[in-house]
Length: 216
Image 1 (tube, rainbow, N blue to C red):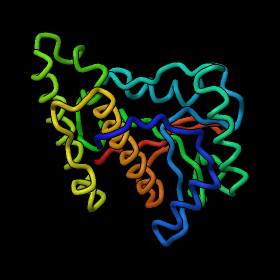
Image 2 (tube, one colour):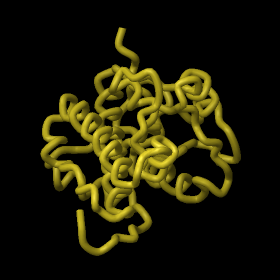
Image 3 (tube, rainbow, N blue to C red):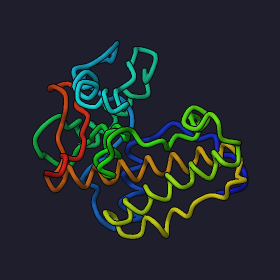
């Protein structure tokens, strides 16, 4: 994960679908994105945000309030672009192919059967462990990441080998890149849950956040 820092680019739904199909040699059934999505312009809190915050707020996993500027045009373009590629935003039921919205915090709570949000965000490590030194915070963070990787590997074979933990001395952007990879795999896992009917949509007909259904 070392080397030149990548600045990213504007995602192209058609290119992403084409490349994924090429890599997997199979059609894509679900596209899962960690971003507020809606069939209507997003200007503030949605029914989906309120539903998740009502269920998971006490477990420190309520949603942030989206706005017209954030996620803004990127969200609109992705929703429209995937819809044009025959991946409409799925807010209920099980009609595929589809686009879904994922919020990793509640998904990880269900994955780990945790009482509250997991402390896995690199930028918040000082808040998680305010009395620990920098290197101790790094080790604590990597320990949480190791648990998440192990749990995901039990759901998707090969995750552990594909996501070796970074070195504690890694730069901040390298640690953030690994965190983003974790979020991406969480999204993929939630996508599999939607496919097999073990996820619940929280929202209305315009937007829904999908979370794996709690085990009973």
